[in-house]
Image (cartoon, rainbow, N blue to C red; front, top):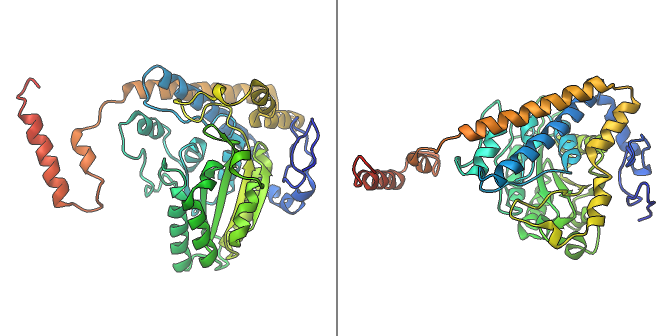
Length: 379
């Protein structure tokens, strides 16, 4: 666990960029370096652009919640490197199962971010249709902590049963990736998912974003050992990556997704990152963490780190100014469309309870219609 003040990380953590943006791979990074060859200059720019844009989206949504436009907001500030890097490592045919903080992963996969706003405003049941080809296999948010790990594992079992693993055809082979946090590792659902994933050798990556706080409980209380070791007790190998290093996160995730598609079974990635904001807009992190801790992690911001790296690569100010403008436009568009959201029709609450028409739903729908009608035309 050796560390220094200018680059504090456990010695076994995969890292490519130091905290100050220098390309200096750690020893465990050697096997992952070939995966960087898949990225070109345009890809580097896209990584930065998506991190910057979701930061602007996140801040705007938080403001909207404070102004009474959303019932709740779940910030992703500080975790952009882990999310963007992992999302770009996935192929279109891979299925991604989020928790409730992976806003940029959904945007990369093709969802309209107003769907996230609608979900947390309470005007939609899910926010998007994961079967829509435009959404690109990004499943619905899951606010029940850890349950998405079972959803993903069951889906991954189906992928294997369907023979879409290890065929050698890169257009056919599929993998499943599930996102969850350090707090979820204390949930029984995650342990059960590990059991089934290991037993059936599912084509799956468990992507753990360790943001150091399960609401107000520090990770040091939840686990006395590094979390990436937790899956090994179930026979699932784990690796720890600097989650604020978007390049390292990309390379590690790309390798493990490749392994999953090629039939080598499940693995777990622990991305070390930090939740700069509150757990949700209902939380006050100043009650349980120090200003010194917050400042420490703010200095290791994934966007600032990657911007410094790009500047060292010769990327000019014009690019960054353009990204800032795009981010501001996205935030303004989200605000405008949020204020334009109307109330959904009452009947919509019955439409997606069952996959097929159901007599009980029809009965309840009619009861509500009759009840509303009983108030007369001025109701």
